[in-house]
Each structure stands twice: as C-alpha cells, then as structure tokens.
Image 1 (tube, rainbow, N blue to C red):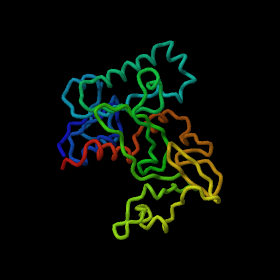
Image 2: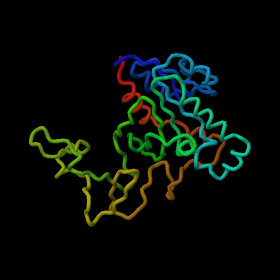
Image 3: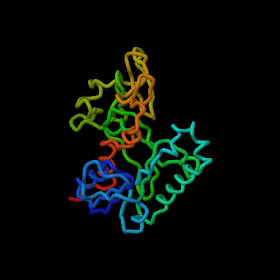
Image 4: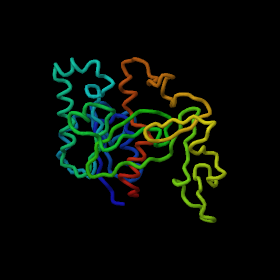
Length: 257
C-alpha cells in the first residue's frame, strides 16, 4: 500500500491521526486546541491555510455546536445571529477543498438538509465499541466503511442468519466465526424464536430473553448520553471512538509499512 499524506482536521485527541501513523502514513492533525497526546505531528491553528497544501486524504471533524439537531432548541437564536450559517460555510469550504479523498464527520445535523444527505451513518458499536453515538459521514473519493465487530447492547445477542455465515472449510456448512462453531451449534440466537424478544437498531437485529430497550454502556436507561452538563462535555463527546479511528485507517489507508 502506498504511503499517504493525511490531514485530520479539527481533531485535538489525535486518535485518527495516530491510527494512520501506526500504519506508516504521514498523518497530521490540526485544531485550535493543543493535542491531548502531545504529538509533534499536531498543528495548532486554523485549518483553512492547510487546505492549499498537497494532501492525499483529509478527514474533517468540524465543530457541531451550531449544527447538531440535538441543539435544535437553540436554532432560532443561532440562525438569527449568523452562527449556523458561518458553521455551514465552514463545512462547505472543507467539502470543496482540492483534495482527492475527503471525509466530513458530524453527528446528525442540519448539514443533511442544508448541504446534502450523508453517504453513510455509522455507530461505534458497529466497530467493536460498547457505545451508541449515531455519526454521519460525507464522502468524496472513498467507499463507505465496512462494519467490524458488532457489540450488542446489554442483555442482547446479535441475531445470526445462516445465509450470512461463511462456509466451513471442512464440511461446507454455515460457520459462525464469532462463536468459532457451526451455525447449528453456535450460541447466537436465530430469527423467529418464540421465547425471544427482537429489536432492530440501525439495521442490525438483536435478541433478548427480556423485553427491554437496547442500551449501550454510555447511555442512561432512557437512552440519553450519560455525560452530565459540564464545561468540557462537548470535548468529551467529540472524541472519535478508537474502533472507528482504526477502521478509517485500515480501510481508507491500509498498511503502508
């Protein structure tokens, strides 16, 4: 795999940048804040002057404060004083950068209605993380991410379908790689078992012995994020989950070592 020059914009955690660097790519992050990991491969400052440089791939995480629908109660004020329009203009500049491969990442937001719908919507639990946080991706020159290890919510198991299983190399029967056993003998529940309760979340079917709501470890019983109000709440929630960062690096960059 070729070595890529990668720009990770509006990232202070360094997780995505480091995931690419771990695979041998020349990856840099940029944010108005210092990097949490103290990396020398982080640029403190405005991202816009960097867009004119030559990059093979850019992944942007524009601030969602004035865009996310979770803050819709304040939209009237943000529209009136121009904050939302400035945030949208910034997103457009990132999307239109002269870079062959671009990703813009944001939670569910007005980008979908004001600019265009996302190319993909992902969840951290689709990439090995015990967490729920619906995330939209706007892609240019890149394929959608392929899901990795599915982490079921507490009290649930992922429903397995024989048609989705690879064939056993010895006998040709459906084989479950998660249980390391044949589908007929694995511990995954199958569809339409009368004693189980089924819930579909973002296209993935789960089953439970109890009729409960699917909740991941970062959620309250009502399904809200556990993080309470605080000055740093936005900062805590803005970090990319490591499983997603690794998937981005592996699938869009590959091993350049």
